[in-house]
Image (cartoon, rainbow over all chains, first blue to last red):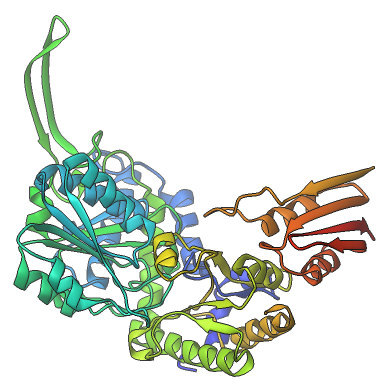
Length: 418
Length: 77
């Protein structure tokens, strides 16, 4: 194995407290190393205060830590500057913010938004809603039978009317790693559209550099990369972030609010929004989680993102091989056969067995996988999977023994499959 | 007292499934006898019910099935 999993697992209290747990639901959320837990605890026990405008020592320290967290994330994704990084609740929150901010700033009736059929509901429903509001149209690029994006169709769909293209980097069902450079080239050659990338399943698992990818926005969730829940990231190119109107209004996102009211009516109004990134972080943010996320990134960097990618490829290769060998004829694995374009996600169906039945029976033997549509129901409908799929997904603390336990439990269900 | 859990009318949705509800309900119940009725569309084999019963401290003492449903009597052990 590329990683010393035994040593890594020592950092995760969840495995000490649940020694029999075989956790293969990392695409849903990941466990937290003690370093992240301690960082959050340390904030609340040592520095807890609200950020910005506080003149006392604790507030200054809290502000410093929170701003440093932005810097750390910016470096992690290769951003030009720390203030291009906006903290949100999660990737869903970030996409909604972009959809409403871009929608109200740039979208006109008749404009087009291009997404793909493999999107998570989070990168689909906000676009459908903003298109309804702005009288724009949403187009869906399809996938082929191997779960690979149809780039010819993307080329066909992206044109002068296209204002936004929003794609996932890695499918949370198929595991497909989309070729963002290729997508970006298509978008740049055929339109002036902005390219938004849902990195929820890629940023935790692969080295990412937003400048090399030539994209305009990237979103991801902290809890899927060892960080706390309730923290996510929206990265955007500075010029676009500066042009965009905020989607959420309130405290800390304004520099000046001069409103004169006479007889209950506004007679003068001057509202100046705050500088980046605070313009998009209205209200008191989740300071502790932001600091925790920075610690998670530090942890991942210490392991090395390239090593993490290699490790997950080893696990995926092993899992697919074992599943095909041991469950031949009764299992269907979704997504690309080519491991080079596949992340650490293995979704599958078994003949005659509802995915929920599979996941429930495995859970009774401490193997945690996920079943259903994985918030990608249109993709399952497109693939003709009316009951969804079962999904195993891997991370740094998984090893071959986890895969063996998973496959061995599945083998017990073989007699139930028709 | 015997209670009956009829899961044949349960919708399979994005967030819920009859087997999940069955396991949760059986785990929460204090009754010593429970009759469970499920659709074969959701739970295709009585063997699945036996596996569940075994894991959460029940035994199935009676099971009948027709084309569409399975009916099983669970007793606590």
